[in-house]
Image (cartoon, rainbow, N blue to C red):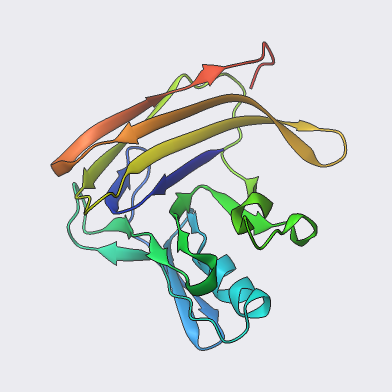
Amino acid sequence: LLTVSVFTVQAQSLHGDMETWRNIRLGADTAHDPAGRFSADSLVLTAGPFLYPGAHFTTQVSQTSDAHSGNYAAKPVSKIQDSLGIAPALLSNAQPQVNFALFDPSNPFAALYFVGGTAVTQRITSISAWIKYLPQGSDYGEISIYATVPVAGGKDSIVGSADTPIYALTTYAQVTAHITYSSPTVV
């Protein structure tokens, strides 16, 4: 499972591209994600109005032609999501979901979990991406990676992770996150 959470960044995958995008209609709104990737936009636009009626929610991932290679890159930008506060922009190869039984208005993101991701048969030691990052004010960026294995009962166990800060990059640079494993379980 690869999850990338950032505040203002443009990113391209080393293995795959950002050329094909899909529109996701959500009532009067439309989320726009690269094929094979997921943002939290569909969750925020779908669940937000039910949890906070009358609140204003907006998409956080957009397509940009400012790309390292090819025609497009993803541009996740964290934004204030009304009553939820600042929601971290998210671009992942796993689909974000919300467990409403765990929802807590004082920490709404504690109910966030992921389904899918990249299935592997051996340990991945690092993941790289081409990133351009222009933070504003006190913004910060980070690559977060979680290696998980299925556990009985439908919950995954995290056996490895990486949290790599992203510093200001005025041009595209390859950023690598190195995964540390906390379990001998083979992923």
